[in-house]
Length: 166
Figure 1: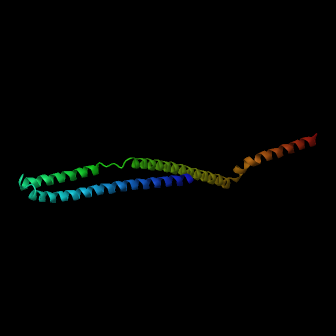
Figure 2 (figure 1 turned 180 degrees about the horizontal axis):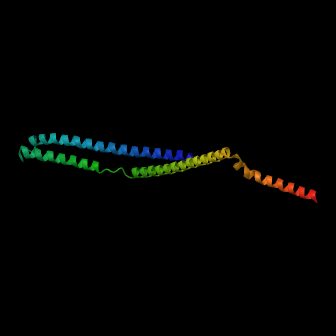
Figure 3 (figure 1 turned 60 degrees about the vertical axis):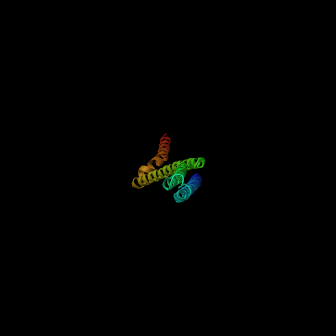
């Protein structure tokens, strides 16, 4: 039973580590995606303003706004790609391995416990069958235990009768 409790504790700890690592990864991704969205929105807004004020004389108002807005949107897309490729690292891999090992041990323990319970059930059925046989046929059950003493008594009686005749 101690082994089952130990394996349950290991499994629980591994699951909590997995959840913690996944939570940190999710928070980091959300942070980067939020920054990407904010930068993208800011880029669109600043692209419009920059085109009008700064670059309208060089390229004209349309091409200047499109260039600066496109650059900011490209940076936002790059941040999204970086966030998508983030890997949790070795912590998650180790925690998953420990969790899987604990789960396999729990399954093994459960199978052993099931086999023990099945064995106890078979023993109870055997005892029930034996008890039923004794109740149904008491002479058949008692005869092997009575046969040896009875045979001894018969042999002694025969010896006495033979000794008395001589």
